Length: 351
Image (cartoon, rainbow, N blue to C red):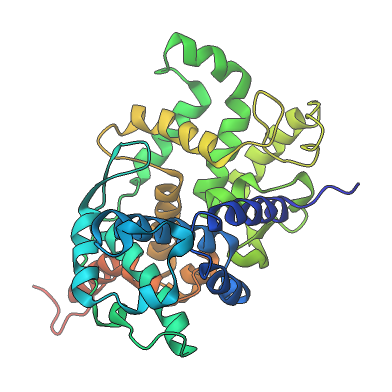
């Protein structure tokens, strides 16, 4: 049987997971997920399912009508009776709550915003189809978001990070034992992330056949499965060639034969393992910055924008569907560029 591409495997796994999650929601929710399927990714639908479960858990705990019902007894008519004040109470509930394992969950502004946004989409679906008469979610104001500082590596920190990956001098003795086995792979992986700005999910999904040295590019699958080619420079090429010399000698576990980056268990590396890898090296170089694979992506985007000043190019290379997303991330750099213009034009030659 032909091995499916990584992104198709993950999509199948997500669809199976979603089917299980939907069983824990009121029966009428099935129609919502069926209706949004053509316009959304499986990951997005899983996020909706999780958010809706939190909402219905709240209703069963806090709403005097709903608390007498099990989830299978909740209907659209119950949903139609919810008022704006109920949703405002829900927003307050989201700040501090306890999950099914009795663990305290704290949601900050962005977490609350996502859950309310999910609820708005949920209500809008049924309201537009005239299956409910009221849409209180449309009247709820989303929490005001405070802009977060973009965390990225400075130029010297990038060099220090790659040096640490290559030499491993500051690692613990236990870490050095693993480093001897994974050094070439780690260097290729982090050089690739820093040199192309691809997402960690796109990185772990790479197959050996996705690397094209003749044209200097890698084939990746963006969100939604769109296939694109991302080009790399000499540093990335050298690191990948060194790793492939080693990779071609490995014997992967069945089902992982095509994977580019393998774990010590000879399986395709997971997103979590790459996150841990980045954290291990980054905390040595810059302990005060919480560096994740996404921060390496921001580091690349920053460097590319500084070199080109072309926000549309940065948006295209990073795979942003909306250039406004890119502008928001690099607005501070834009301001710095504008301020630098003040010294570029002289009205009279300085004495």
